[in-house]
Amino acid sequence: MKTWLITGAAAGLGREWTEAALERGDRVAATGRSGLERLDDLRDQHAERLLALELDVTDRERAFAVVQEAADTFGSLDVVVNNAGYGHFGMVEELTEAEVRAQMETNFYGTLWVTQAALPIMRAQGAGHILQNTSEGGIIAYPGIGAYHASKWAVEGLTESLAQEVAGLGIKVTLVEPGPFGTGWLDAGVQSARIPAYDPVRPENLVWELGDPRATREAILKVVDAQEPPRRIFLGRGSLPQAEAAYAERLETWREWQPVSVAAMGAA
Image (cartoon, rainbow, N blue to C red):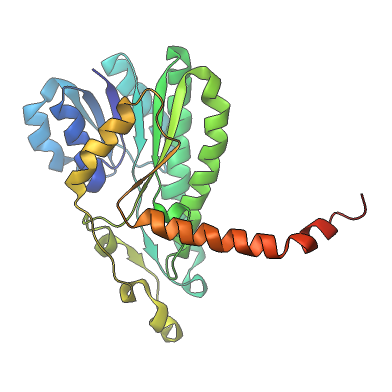
């Protein structure tokens, strides 16, 4: 029996993973900024193994208190899933300061606060697994979602360092990178005031193949149960080809400009 803490657990992928963990007999501290009543059916079925806690992840003090309460209630903290977040839609020129700060506060700082709260507990146990739900948008980018990409790329960089820091402490770290899924994420996003000049390249002009959220359950359980879990894993079939194309383009450019790069060091 594992003990999970999942943020953003009331809907979307967080709800799917909460249900998957409970159905196989695990315990879950399920957190959400609002809407926890949507977990009432799970509470009725799994009363002793589900702890629903209100948490706005941008509140660092509350994040530490909730993570500690989960560990104290269940006696351990084996898996932390940083899933809470949202998408902000707006071209770079359209973004206001408040919009960018709000995006970073939730998607980046919220992930950081929950991670920091979990680490002392996992260090004391000598074991634990942290899953950061970033996105395929954590390594590739599309027009019109710059603030969102910035927040997810920041989590990716933070987590690369974290994984190296905790490797000798028994703590595993995985970046979960879903492609588009039918969770309503696209419809729930916040939209900046529009500048018409950018209309031809807006995200709604792209064709998205949406995956079935329920199909992610088996994948996430396999990651959690793996003796050596992956540092990164895509969820969805379209992400890897896009990532391969993006990295091929980067490598081609770096190699083309390598003589200039080397010359920038000066004489040996």
